[in-house]
Image (tube, rainbow, N blue to C red; front, side):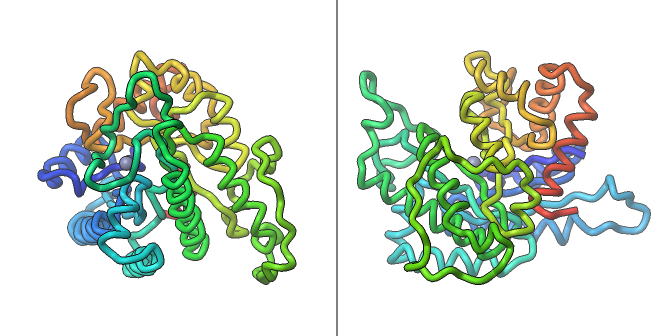
Length: 340
Ligand SMILES: [Zn+2]
């Protein structure tokens, strides 16, 4: 069984065709990811619709014939300003997001959320997902204003809190913001000793000892299941683009690493290096459809069946059978999202 842990079926006009081809290829689960409040609503609708048509095990079907779509609800860092404009305030955005999350058992995660310091602003008039280009001669960091960064951090932090409240994992999007993203997650772990200790008692704000944010002091807890049981921040980094140093930090925080078609690109050797080293029990695969088609389809519209091309690439890269990647990634998905 293959699982596409990150797709945007709502961006596609031919969902039925995508699903048919994915089923034929051996994909059995897809997590459809919300990028805004509207997209999150759609994501839940799609998951519900295909759970009726496709997920029930009928007479004569084996477990392997089962097919399910799950949903994630969240606000992408580049969509935050647009949602605030539409829904009035950040608070109202999160109330709405929470309602959507609680409306269906098909919701298994919060995201995609995170930090994206690639584009100049999140002004919706200039926004086009996954399409920003940095001006030559300027670094990405220079392109993102302090105000913008502050807004994105708030948007991310609030979604972490929502995920914790709902006991769901987060799907993290990160572009040019590794240090800050690790600081925030680490800080969220550390600022909730009530969860780490396993007691549900809230520590009054005035009694909490503020800790300086230090990436090098990230808690060395590798067992994400412990975090799961105790309510800490858990989740995955989607469409991994960082180097091994960054990957080690993500793993130390108990996170999974999900590889998209980017790992197959010839100009992404650092991503391939991570894919070679990451423990099998922390590895996931995704398409990010309709974006990021793997080689040799780079540049063309991507779809969930292509998750197998990426899995094949990973098997070859690590010199292990495809079955091993298939088993590990499907087991990891079931463990992280608590789905069967
Ligand atoms: Zn995405």
